[in-house]
Each structure stands twice: as C-alpha cells, then as structure tokens.
Amino acid sequence: MNGDLLDLEALSSLPDGLMEAFRHALRTAGYDGRILGQAEAIAPRQFDAVRLPLVHAWLARQPGAAPLLARLFAYRDGVPREQAFDVLGREVGGALEACGVFVPDDDRIRCSMRLLPFGRVWIASDDADARHDPVMGPGATTQELLTTLPTPMPARVLDVGCGAGSLALAAARAGAASVTAIDLDPRAVTLTRWNARLNDLEVAAHAGDLLAPVRERQFDLILAQPPFVPQPPGVEATTYLHGGSRGDELALRLLGELPGAMAPGGRALVLVDTAPPAGQATIERIRDALPEIPLQLSVITAMGHESHALAIGYAAAADSTLGPAFAEAAQRYAAHVEALGITHTRHALVVLRKPLPNEPSWAVSVEPRNHTLYGAPLLRRLDAAMALATLAPDDLVQAKVQPPAGAALVQSHPLDGQGPTTFRFVSPGGRAPDQELSSAALLLLDLAAQTDTVAALVEAYAEACEDDPARVKAAVLDFLRKALVSGMLEPREDSSS
Ligand SMILES: C[S@@+](CC[C@H](N)C(=O)[O-])C[C@H]1O[C@@H](n2cnc3c(N)ncnc32)[C@H](O)[C@@H]1O
Image (cartoon, rainbow, N blue to C red; front, side, top):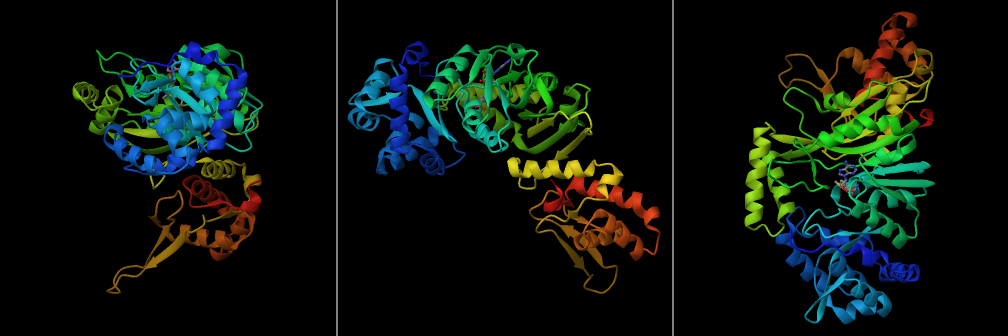
C-alpha cells in the first residue's frame, strides 16, 4: 500500500453549488460506464501493475473528455492540469486541487481518489492502494450484485457494509423510497454521505457493526457483500477485505442476523465467498448460519478460486506493485489457507426471502452451467418455479408448466442396433443438468409440452397409462415439483402471475 488516504474533512466542506457543478461536468463529459467498459476489455483479469501501461496508452489516444476523466479518476494516470480544468471547469478543478484531491506531478495532476461511474451514479472511494484501510468503491463483485437488483425497487432498502455507498446509491437512483447504509468503518460512512451529495440522492448512513444501528427496524430489501478474505495470523486486518480467519465468519454472522431485519415478504441478496470443510455443501453451511424460522432460501453457486490463485489475489491487494511485500504476503496467505485445508472456494449469491404467513419455506441450491451468478431476470424465474413447486395439490393442478426455452429430448439409437434406445433431456440455456430420462419422465415431459393445465396433464398421463387419474395424480404432482425445482419444467408465462 503506497498512496495516502483522501482528506475527507476537506472534501466534505465543498459547498452544494460546487457539488452540482461537479456533477454537471461529469455528465457533460459523458463519463459513464461505456468508456470504462472499453478500457476494462484491455488485458482483462490481469493485475493493474501489468495492464495499466496499456490502458493508459489506449485512453491517451482516444479523443474527447470521457477518456481524459477515466485516466484521471479510474486509472491513476497523470493528465495535463489545463486539460483537466477545461473539462471540469476552473471552479471545480481549483476546489478539488485545494482540498488535496488533485496532486501536482510536474505539469500534470494525479487524483488521490477514485471516482467511477457505477450504473447511473458516480462513486468516489479511496484508491485501493492507499496506505491503510481504504474504503472500497465499486468492483467486479459490486457489479454482480447490481445485476441482481429487482425492478421495481422495493420501498425500504438497507445496504450493510456499504463501503463508499455504491449499492445504496444505485438503489436510491432506481427509486427506493428510503435507503439506509451501514458500515463499520466511519470513513466509509463519510464517503457514502459525500457520494449521496454528489449524486443528489438521499441515503441515511450510519457507522456500526452489521445491523446494530438499525435494531427493531425492518426492510424490504437488504444488500450485502461482506468481506471474505481469510486473515492469516500476523497480517493486520483490513476492514474491507478480511472476513475472519477462515474468511466467511463475518458473512455467516450477518446471515444469522439478517432475517430479524427483513419485513414479511422482504428479501436479502448477499454475496458470500466460502470454503466449506470437506463433506459440507455450500447450502448446508449457509443454512447452518440461519435462524430456525420460516425462510425461502436460494443459493446460486459459481466457481470460486483455487487456493494459490486466491493467495496471489489477496497479496496483490496488499502490494499492487507485485514487489517484495507481495511475495511475502502471497506465501503467508498460501500457508494459512493450506493450514485450514482450503483447496478452493465457492462464490455464492444467497437470496433469502421471509415468507408471508401463508407461504411455504423452502431451500434450493443452483449451480449455473456457465459458472456465472444469476441476475434479476433468472432470479425471478427461479422464484416463480419454486412458488409453483410448493403449491398445495389443489392449486398446483390449475397451474401451467412447460419445458424451458431451448430444451430438447434427444433420442439415441446404438449404431450396431444392439441395446435399447435412450432419451436424454438437454437444456443448454437452462438450469437443469442434461440427463437420461426414464420412460415415465419422457412421457410426462412430452405431455407437459402439449397440455394446457397440470390437471389436463394428469388426465393425459392416466389415459396414456390406461390408469385412473385419481391413482396417478400424486405421482405426477411429485414429478412436477421435482422437475420445477431442478429446472426441467418452468411455469408457463401466462400462469406465473
Ligand atoms: C467487500 S466490501 C463491500 C463494499 C460495498 N458493499 C461494495 O459492494 O462495493 C465490505 C464492506 O464491509 C464493511 N464491514 C466490515 N466489517 C463490518 C462490520 N462488522 N459491520 C459493518 N460493515 C463491515 C467494510 O468496511 C467494507 O466497506
């Protein structure tokens, strides 16, 4: 860690009129996600120490104001002072210089804060290289959570461990009626308030441990991305990184507290990185952390990282120049996770819903085939499937189901004509694994695509089996519930409302 932390007191003293002029300059310059999207496509997934020279060179060749601001605010490049002042306006440039945000570097200036477009807001944060305990701005995982935000935005939103307030402000911009943000780090709270002013949005930000500042209150949506890096003995804690010795302790403590702050029908979206001990599934580790009350739980699990890759990633946060401190930290992290028996981690999106009094509880675990966590549209489909799967029999028979779009039944005959013909269910874009089908499952899926309601499906299946509908009904409903949970069937669009 080498840079200095921003002087937040000076930054917070900027008057409202200047904040408005700053916002106006950012908007006029077109400083938004498009320019960062292009720059991030340069040598993706490489460390900054390796890729930044190429990013700087590319941005310097691009015409216009947005690439200049990206160099200054996103990629720590020195830019000619006059050019920056032309884009931001003399008053804004001078005020940022006076409060130490711009640091002179020969005839250029550098910026001591990061300022990134994030969705439809701008977020200022510490440079991740700042000397000690920086406040985290939006990163790749923050972006992942952004894609899960529901529309329309629920009324009362809470962002726990808000960092610079990225998700809180995204929720406020998306129309939440009230947004509350909490962070243990008072610097994060100050930056969240400053970012709310910069974006002309309302967020109530509090300093405190997890949900302590909002005891007795309930929310319709809670967002969190707790720190998840394992902390080796002898490594000084960094608040935004370390989640306990194993890494997931803080996240599990949060999961234990969350349901108490969820309104009936309310939801929580939490990103968790965890390495369950051998023999324990990710969903079991999550469930064990939750209180024993009615809940609807979906755990979407993607690949995490192999332990050495993890150690390298964590060490790069300690020394982004990849120098001697990086080498020492990498070895220390690798030894620590090895001693804990961690060979790889799982990256999971935990979706919790507190059911209304007449709704069922359930838990489902999903491993997307492309190892990419679900965004809001797929979460909605999963929810709709689970809602149908848990209906009482009399309601389920009135529902309409269908195989997911793109699913197919593939018939294979042995080339030599020996052996039976088999049928496989394949669903390249869906959630269900490809699988061989029994003849009963084959018939049911086939009939599901042809019949209107589940009641008609029960009738058609009984007729095909020359049996009585009343006798086959329970078995058909059982199959349908399992098929809805696994993703072999989904609610038909006109039936999910
Ligand atoms: C990984 S960062 C996520 C920041 C932000 N939510 C985002 O997605 O960009 C985790 C945040 O949790 C905060 N934090 C750590 N321990 C906490 C605790 N016990 N209570 C509340 N916040 C905590 C850190 O200060 C940090 O801002």
